[in-house]
Image 1 (cartoon, one colour):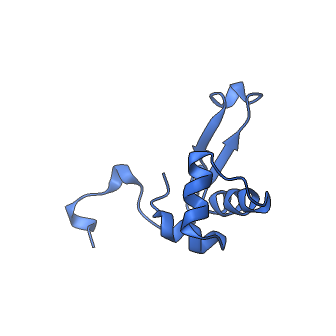
Image 2: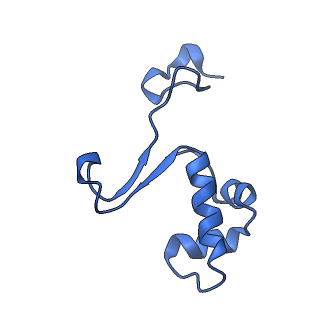
Length: 85
């Protein structure tokens, strides 16, 4: 959703790629701080975690935060050959 590789996500969160992969698979049995570090990194990148109590938001799961005019980058729907770098 945010275009980060596993290695980039690991580096940004201060975790090893192996730890991120284990968390992704639900197999991590190590320190709980790893999950919190990963969540904080994803939230900083614009991911919103929704609990089952957020039915007005579309139900449980994850969403991308709405971008503001000050956000850098080009929205996917605006990508074309003219702005391909």
